[in-house]
Image (cartoon, rainbow, N blue to C red; front, top):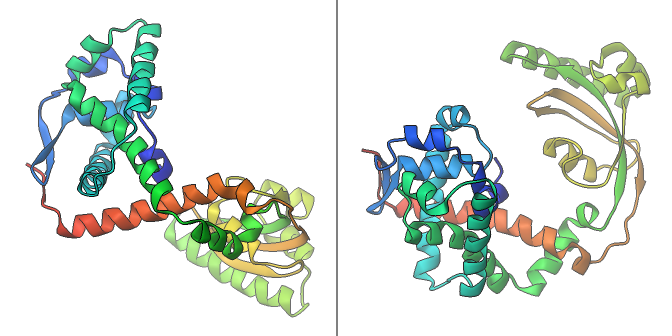
Length: 299
């Protein structure tokens, strides 16, 4: 799960919580304490299932969910120390929307949240965190910082498109990953020295469906179309240039940009996406700094 997802409010998905799972949870059991503030089993259940996880997935990802809740509590305390609070009217609206979702699914908000051991104050704190953090980012990010970020990462945000092709090797284990890395390192040298064409490398070595198209994976214009590792590398290339070997959860890649089309979007067009990136970076930095001085215990 990404940072953006972690800081998104839980209210819009809370209706995914199932009564059977809640009944089975020892909701009041303390899982961890952050500077004396308890995180309970009910908190973990609510947090996990409100993000679309099944009861089995909540159990399987229990440790990760606890760490995310610790992060959220640390950020909550950080914001409180800076006297950053959510807009009260928007907070009330979000909680109302949450309750309405539960009702539309045939549930009773008061009964459901009580089974999770969640008080109105706890719900208010959880829902309000996202609103307060977003407000903090808006307040503390200066226009010149947004402009500089845009200039530093312009191809990612101005609508620039790059057309990419790849040689891909599967790597289901460490041995396969090492072998794939060595193979693609050699292939890259041969292509760059004109001892082999990229198309020839695709035909000889690529294990991706795109091999049937000479490795062409198409035009890339935004994050999410390819793995982030590939997208980041592609933005830095001019037509004909190669990058790799690049490791992703899928395997090992050698990529080449074969065309590039400049975009026309402005910094204002890209402002929401830039703020999201800045928000992610600041969240990570804030959590690291707060963890370094926090007292976190796991009974």
